[in-house]
Amino acid sequence: MTSTFTSYSLIARDLQRSESVLRRQPMIQREADYYLEKIGSVKTVDAFVSDRRLLTFAMSAFGLQDMAYAKAFVRKVLNEGQDAPDAFVNKLADKRYLEFAKAFDFKRYGAATTAFDSVQKGVVDKYVRQSLETQAGSDNEGVRLALYFQRNASKLTSVTEILADRALNEVVKTALRLPDVFSLVNIDKQIQTLESRVDLADFRDPAKLNQFIKRFTTLWDVDNGRQSVGGVASLFGQTGQAGVSDALMASLAKIRTRV
Image (cartoon, rainbow, N blue to C red; front, side):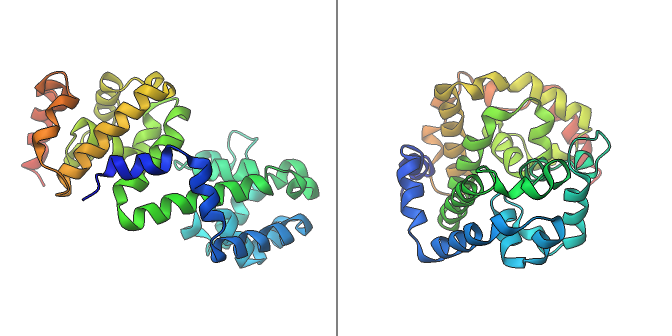
């Protein structure tokens, strides 16, 4: 059985080639062609939202395809824009909506919004990358999570962004051996724990990021019956580094007695 890290590495080692192969798939090519043909003529939020196929493609590029049906929600995000501190999108915990609002900023640029290369070729590039991760996940969810983490980890500025993102949270919890019940701990304690265990600057170092992903994928394989525990010990300098602090374990024990 191919390990998760090996499968991830085969894709990540040459992302440009991996994405190029995917672009030639008929369905992806067909949807990308439709998007590029239509998006330049869209001048308003209403015109954008009314084309279900166009909207689904665009939202899929940001991993938001499950919300393409929520037209009133999307209108509110785009009509309010992202400049005002109290804009609707700035109140949402999921930062993917903010990225989406920045790309399709009709509030700021009006009819010129869809003329930018970032909205045309840029969105197609994002769609291809999302599709690559999705297809990888159909065979092994751990590969999808690793690719997602590799794409987003270097942009993190706070551990709260990890807690707010289910995929990032899954990777970090697995790599640090934090139990599922960790999510029930007081949020301040969660933040304190992650800040003491994770140095976000490491994720901007390709070598350190790769090592973290290797640790995650190895432990993912163990948790999902894809690998024995024998090869895991070398990932940690000492046993305590792979576990949870005594204080946190005490908190978790109290929670377990109540749930």
